[in-house]
Amino acid sequence: MREKFGLIIHWIGFSIGLVFSLGILWFLTGFATTPLLILLVTLTFAIPFGSCWLIRRVVTGYAGFFPWTKEDKK
Image (cartoon, rainbow, N blue to C red):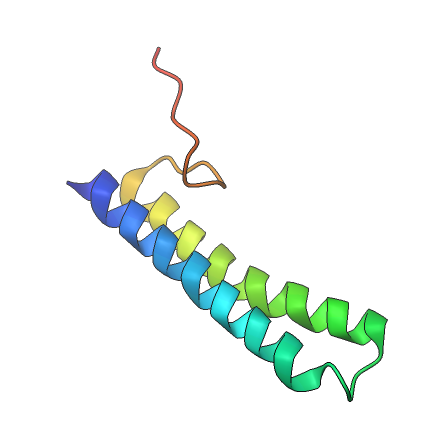
């Protein structure tokens, strides 16, 4: 149950990061220089995605950085 909840949190972070970064890309394309735009898009994706990954890591005890990775069974 915790694993599924953690996975939902992880995908929510991915979705929020994707929406925010695409919004920044769309709104600032004509105003910002390319290096600044790349930095802003990267940060606006990485902050929510990384935060939700950290929450998933705390909740489940294991979390691969990508949602489709599985824990190695020992």
